[in-house]
Length: 168
Image (cartoon, rainbow, N blue to C red; front, top):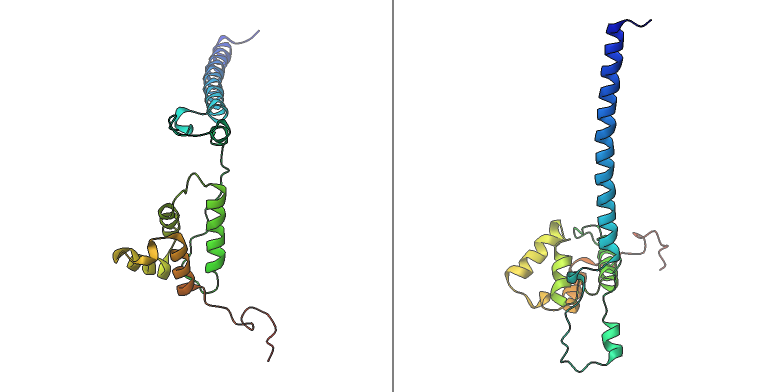
């Protein structure tokens, strides 16, 4: 026969376990609802995902079909660039890949320049700060901006420095 004190301890332990299981079940239900909500948002575009089109514009049905919203892939940003000589071209290539894969996110030269400016650090950040503070022509177009950035930081690496044989 079991001691009544031991029986009370077992009942308390079972009650505590039951309460814990109930709490876990509620948390799992909340998580499942959150996952379903996230899935619904990913599968069904919201009104903000749909581009605004002017119905009075002279667009053929094919053009309107081509402008339907498409999910652009996530592209991680390039590593910040601090002005290291010889690596500017790699930084710009990675930035161009972002713009290529997410054209609706970066539709203008100004959007591209701003995105790239936010990734500059150190002497590259000081350089671009000077351009912005003087409203330089170097920040007016993406082509001009990249040309100025390359001119400032993409000095050619000498063959011996790049690990290539030096030919004389």
